[in-house]
Every structure is written in C-alpha cells, then in structure tokens.
Length: 228
Image 1: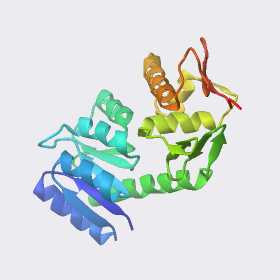
Image 2 (image 1 turned 90 degrees about the vertical axis):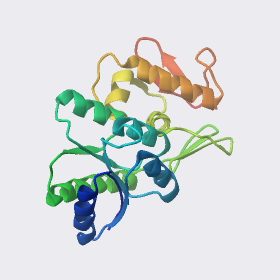
Image 3 (image 1 turned 180 degrees about the vertical axis):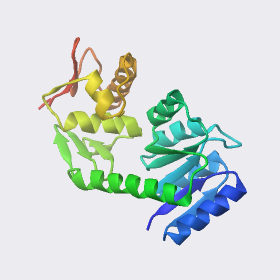
Image 4 (image 1 turned 45 degrees about the vertical axis):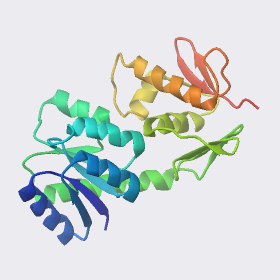
C-alpha cells in the first residue's frame, strides 16, 4: 500500500484512477492544481506522484521541475505527448516514468509497482552515512551536515554530492555524472554539471580557485577529496 498524490484536473479521469488505485489498496490524495501538489509534496510526503501535464495553473513540466527542487518522491507523468523529444524532456526534468493517454488501470498499476520497487531497492542499498572530513552525508535520510550544521541542498545537488562522496579520490567525468545522476546520456550538457558543482562549492564554503572537497581535473572531470 502506498500514499499516492494524484495531480489531475479532469474529474472523470480522477474518479476512475482513484477507484482503480483504491481498489488496489493504495491511499489516494487527488488534487487539481500544481500549486496544491507542491504544498502536499513538501508537507505530507507522499510515496508516489502521478502528474498530469495539462494543469490549469502551472504547466506540468514546470511543476515537475519545481517538485524536483524540494523532493525526490517518485513521479510518474501522465501525458498525451508521444514524441521522443517530449519524452526525453520529461525524463530529463526528473520524471521516473511516464504513461501516455489513454491508459488502463492495469497499466498504471503495473508502472506504480515497478517504480515503487525500484525506489525501495535504492533506499535499501544506500549506506547509513558517508563521512568525508567534516562532511557527513546520510543517503537514507537525504541529509547533509558540514561541521555539524545542516546544509540545504536541492535534490540534484544532493545526488551529485552523494555520488562523488561514495567515490572519494576517484576522478568522475561529466559524462558519468550525466549518465548516473541525471540518468541521461546527453552530449553537450557539460554546463549543467558545472553549474551544479559551482552551487555545491558555494554551499560547502569553497571556490574553484581554492577547493577543499571538490577538485576539478581539467579536461577530465571532478574529484572529491578528504581535506583532512
């Protein structure tokens, strides 16, 4: 059983999906606007979100990006868009999976089970804590502390930092970060990596000129080191 946030403004679709999900043993929280969904994601922490893209207040893709800045909750996007470019854009924005409309109750239930299973496996495989110098990363709680003080990181900043911390002393290429953290093999997106590394450095109290934890290896990638 999971608590599922259903973000859909069509009442007929909402009623049908709510019935199918409830019959399967899930608890459903239906809302019709992205703003409501963002509030619930931060306050009630659902187990999974089904997100329609055609919302009346905020474009669904924009809502997904906003959601990803505050939460790593699994998101399945429901969309009528079928082009490869649209699907790639959705996955790049942070969707864990997608279904194209129209879809059956059985189809969405199978996708939900698969996404929740992957999420549980990922959590179980994570270490309790990773310590690098004065930096403590707790993957299961998605918390980071520096000298005992919590750091406020976005979802993607946390993912990048945790990936590097698990590989202290190894040079990680931008391509590897794009593949493993963004789960996309996008050529020519090195600037995305550089921007996130820059944000992380700022929050860690360092700069590219005077790094402590994150060292750039020119032409290769970035490496986390233990400054102690």
